[in-house]
Amino acid sequence: MPDDPSDASSFRAPPAPTDLRRPGPESCAALAAWDRGHVWHAFTQMQEYEPLLIERGEGCTLVDSDGRRYLDGSASMWCNVHGHGHPRLDAALVAQARRVAHTTNLGLSNPTTIEFAKRLVEVAPPGLEKVFFTGDGSSAVEAALKMAFQYWLQADPPREGRTKFIAIGEAYHGDTLGAVAVGGVDRFTSVFAPLTFEPIRLPSPGGVCPSTGRPAPTLGESLELLERVLVAHEGKIAAMVMEPVMQAAAGIWIHPAGYLRGVRELTTKHGVLLILDEVAVGFGRTGTMFACQQEGVVPDFLCLAKGLTAGYLPMAATLTTAEVWQAFLGTYAQRRTFFHGHTYGGNPLAAAVGLASLDLFRDEAVLESLPPKIARLGEHLDRIAKLGVVGAVRQCGLVGGIDLVADKGSRRAFPWQEQRGMKACLAARQHGAILRPLGDVVVIWPPLSITLDELDRLCHAAEAGIRAATE
Ligand SMILES: *Cc1c(COP(=O)(O)O)cnc(C)c1O
View 1: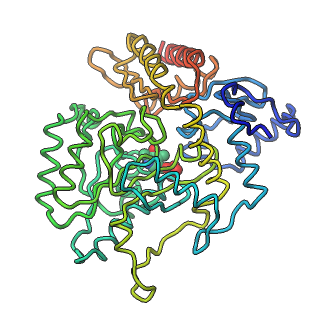
View 2: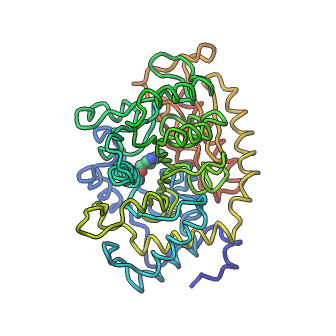
View 3: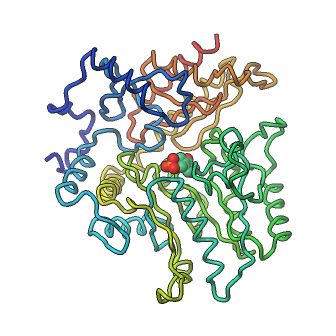
């Protein structure tokens, strides 16, 4: 068992498991046909889908069925933290599987999930003491929205009028209906508008309004607008929900420093709960364990998912305060229970890996290792920003966003149908990197364990892909 912590520092690429042989060319063709025939891929136009079969992961490298190697430039959809096939994560998973793979957390418990909850509370901002486990980021947000709503009905004294939510323009909170309601990326959500509720929508403080091309409001304007909304709807708002510091899916939009703290001060002043969706930015991505720690903010709800199990297994968590929890206590007959749950919530396999990931953050000093990587990414982005087709670059921690534009001076966009962002990412595959764009924003989002050398190669591949797709 490679679970000796001293192995960790020398971790690069574990040997391929001997019991899993690479599929031969015939079976690859069959798999690709079955993939096209039967697998409905997320966020993918299946008529245009071209299979790429990833057969193995080794550290920050993904290996396809032909043996070609690619750096994982999207951290396997923003999840992976310590690399693929990390011996300590693998060992934790196997050890838990030998005990029990799943029971249920509906009225039962298991040692691993209990320990994970306790460790999460220890690393979370102070005051977030209660952990509600779900299965994915969307359900972590759903749970927070429903808890916030029910909290006011059962608060002492009850405040039944607090039924509205404040959300931010171009926000992304997931794809279940409650999360879609508070989401603001129109190209994802507008078709489902008839099925959802309307939040009070504030313009994003961190981007360019795509419909008008107008720059985001200033910090002062954003906070003034929020206060006006809070006053206008005094006593009517249950909670405000937002992605702190960076709106990822919007296109790596970064909020001005001080916005988050201002939001916390104003929501506290007006008695409105604050839900922070750290599904994308949690677990070191912005340079601190949680993004809210950059501004010393403690929310009422903290939603975690993607990096929670370091990119191994689906699991999410909604952390909240003793005050919120208290409002749900009572006898069963008092009907104060939170009647909400997901079958696999708190799954012990996922909890075991999550625990091992927290150990790695400590033992491999992951957060301390980030500043040189963040600086190096910044140097690459500065160089890429000079390309004629790049309108702007943005960086937050170990994430980069590169805007591709048809005209650098006016920042005029390419016609969206041309899918330049997607083409640049597909071209980067020829240069050994897997990247995923957000519209015409090329995103660089590697595992936190990426080495400086790998980061250099990844950024050069991104640049080569951009050149190929825009010449
Ligand atoms: C990915 C994401 C979600 C949704 O998470 P799923 O696990 O895909 O349901 C929610 N919020 C943010 C900020 C995200 O980036």
